[in-house]
Length: 244
Length: 213
Image 1 (tube, each protein chain N blue to C red):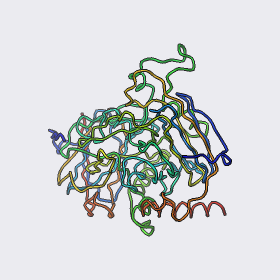
Image 2 (image 1 turned 30 degrees about the vertical axis):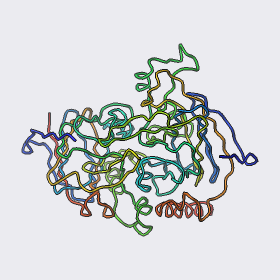
Image 3 (image 1 turned 90 degrees about the vertical axis):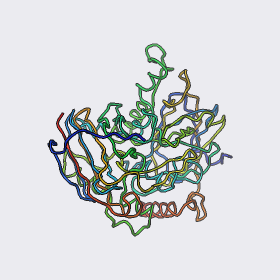
Image 4 (image 1 turned 180 degrees about the vertical axis):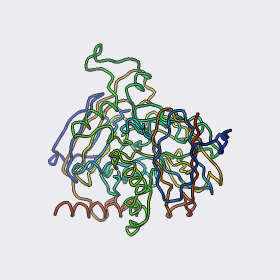
């Protein structure tokens, strides 16, 4: 997937363990690139103008009859509107049912990893990272939602058993997220507790944001399901209301 | 699926009531008490969220619960975890066999997306949750709505990543029973959804019972 260099407004690299948040404008595109492979970027999404409206995992899955995310699918808020569309994806499967880890889960998996001994290589976890980033926007525990895990695949068997699928994300895999409203994006680049890795060391993830175009009538995300057609109609009506 | 019956006698329950379809319910259950939900007529989805009654910021977490047990379905033995990783309740009996926690709750807005824009008027679980919260007080709002459990609901996920709403793993009189591991607030919407088979297109009453330890 190419990058429209002349339209890029932001570039950064998330180091292993790092958290990040930013308010993106409607129709800006955020590309996440798993440069080394096997990354896990846990993410939460909010309406930047009214964070009481937030990502809703069940509504996203139900509307699209899917248990995972990839190109053509969208991320719904709890108000029947679309926060983000997935407009490009070279990975193929992003998780949104496996949740994220906290300090206890990571300690159980990787052992103790305190700042006192490890300095900035200490074992940061997604829950604490989210608490820090959410707090910067006046949000907290009450605003936690079931998150997305980009580049992760957790498989579910007939009995409901969940297992980590190794090799889901290859070096250089990328996913493009187009905001359909002004969106607060909160990220944590941290190991998932289901990851069988035995030493702590999340790989770096590249971030690029560019000014994208509004989706046309034949946009793949809009036409992928009749539900998404209605989701876009409701989201676009809301944008008109907000602009008055 | 593992089925386990309870030996508790309904005559000895300290609380025993019937909640009609389409109604919400907020009720505290104390640590050690046993709480039972009975699917009286079968195939009724019971949308449920739990909170630490002493600290409402601590609430049920669907993803922590399924991640910790490595399984997406809830049944006997499942610890219902909060976002802090603490057990709120433990499922101690279950004659249905499995319960969903990925399907969420219906709302006026999601009904518009899923079915048709003109479905916005239809009664839905989130409205029942919000009314029960408002009546319960303590400042609870939509901000406090965590992803819920759907007792008696069947939402199979396939290894290929498919997800659907299916009729019936439950039946008349089947029940699920839990022990409170801390003082909990139980928030229920007895689901009024008429657009999919989660209630077999016929929402019906449920029975709620509480026993002292």
